Image (cartoon, rainbow, N blue to C red):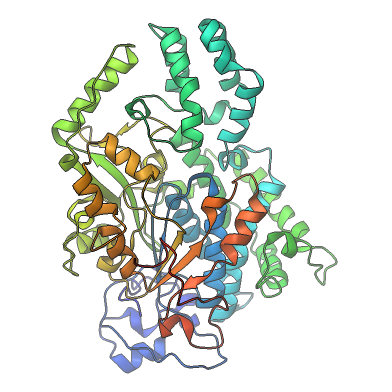
Length: 564
């Protein structure tokens, strides 16, 4: 069971669900708390631990668990499929943590669990099983959002780099930059300012291209760095200096638009959502979106057609009134679902030296980047309560990752999504709002089970992939930031008591995908892999009962899915 419990402002629908009744009071005794159920899907205060008897009953029993999500760049659709499958079997999540693209997935998970139709089934409260199937359906339907609204800015935001790279390759811009830098610059600027890309392109990059003191230097470097950015290569300190193609604050706004739809913000169609949920959630259990979209409902429409009407009508109204409507992106991180969102932070004198090196890069002058890795911290956004809890380190972890913990305060999702997914290569390191420290992206804690445990999570499912950290993007960036071999072994080593192994050990179950071997362009294959991945655990919390996931593999010893 999760130590996280619900705030007293929990909606009556959740209390009626048994998703946080008497467990949401500090006076409830153990018997009452057990009867009241868990705090799934809601923000919680601490209560005493309660032992839950896991039986082989056919009745669906919601579990108290938190989920850690490893960032995976453009393969983010694997997250949605994995989370959908986990929720189908174990109910709504009680907490989440992630960095890089995992921050976006955490944002979407919280938004979906906020949707009124997840917990309210018409005039009655949903059962825990109905709520699980409904949240799972919405996670799967993100695939449908891209299908239905494929030409919109927010759909483009899910995979912006691919069309850019195709256009750059087709125009032979890298070759042109070697012979005619100014022509290459003009062609690149024209591409970046095209109608279908302009709203998501980093204006700092366009400004540098147009006003560079040495166009050949910057154009060649920017075009040459695109391949490294797409492939998440960390082989030059330039990735920490070079303005990226993507405006991450603008990108976050587009994610906020999608999240607002799923949370039920704006002109919420309660009748339409209830029709969609009631017709498609239970029949869609065990299926992914292409199969769900084809289900013919009693109304004669398919689930895909119902969803298309919902999404297109909502979006048209929201976009028309966006200036006056509240967006999910401006909600505090973790206000509805306990969440910790991470990024790496350059502090102290190292932050000043980075700033000096950045100025030299913009001036097209040689620079040397000297960062003391002792001044690189691992920062997190969340509620003040959760951050204080983690900062107190109640589990007394003494690993190198926990020692680098830094609270970034109770920021909004706009702030967190402007920095955590902004990995080096995709954009340069970014000054944080405090004006002192610098974010270098969310690569720092890609296995966030330790902070989840310190936050109070007793049961943790970690969504990961086969493979270790050797040669990874995270190690590459950390090395550019001054990490030596001894510290690398301490943080990311595959043997002994490294923070990497400790993080795996603290996971009660590991969702073991194989996304490293897949192409982000093949969305259906990526989602199939995430949806059907083996779950590595021998914990009765997850293995017992009729609702337990079918593909549990306690003997899996794959690197990344088991402690070596």
